[in-house]
Each structure stands twice: as structure tokens, then as C-alpha cells.
Image (tube, rainbow, N blue to C red; front, side, top):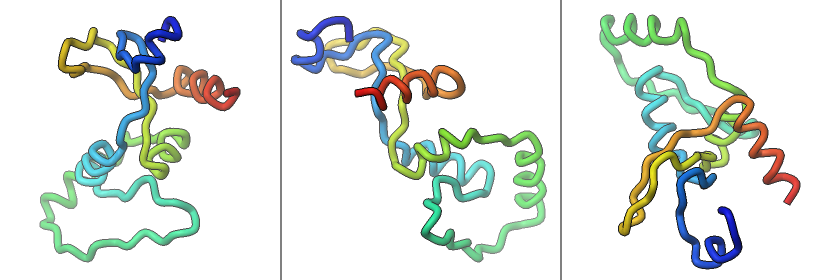
Length: 116
């Protein structure tokens, strides 16, 4: 936020960095690619022994060819929170659009958060 009044009143503005719930993204990724992500190192991932048709198995295998997930995003999925940036101007109801941060931009904001 640009000044203390916006922080004090918790006003959402365009370009603000916010923490969002990772569960919807995690469940979509797991259903789309057929892989568990965000599993913490100490716990074990339980594989569901659900029978999948041959067509579904081929589709998941073809999707995994170009799949690549950054370690920083996987760590955020494990914690249950994702850093996102608001790209629209929120209206009266507080609804807004945004993007999930990744790459150099994610590392920059994680470093800034760690300094605080």
C-alpha cells in the first residue's frame, strides 16, 4: 500500500501484494496433472488407488511432459498460502482480479517480507 492510512483501514488497491488461500490452486493442479504437490518433507504422500481409464492415464502422461513447478511455489503450496498481486481496481464489494507471483518477482517480494 502507498501510505499508512491504507494499511490502517485495510484498503485493497491495484498493485497490492496479498496472501491468498492455496487450496483451490492445489486441488486444480492435482486433478489436472495427477500429482500431489505441496507435501511437507516429514509426511508421506498417500496415493489414492483409484482406477483410471487408459485414456485418462494417457492424457495425464501427455500433460506431464511440459510440466515444471518452481520449488518456491511448491513450498508455498505446502504452507497453504500463495503470494499474489492485485491487477484490477477493487470496487465497493472488494472483489478483484490478480495473478499468482512466480519467478523473479516472487523472490523479490519474499525477500522483502523476510526483512520485516
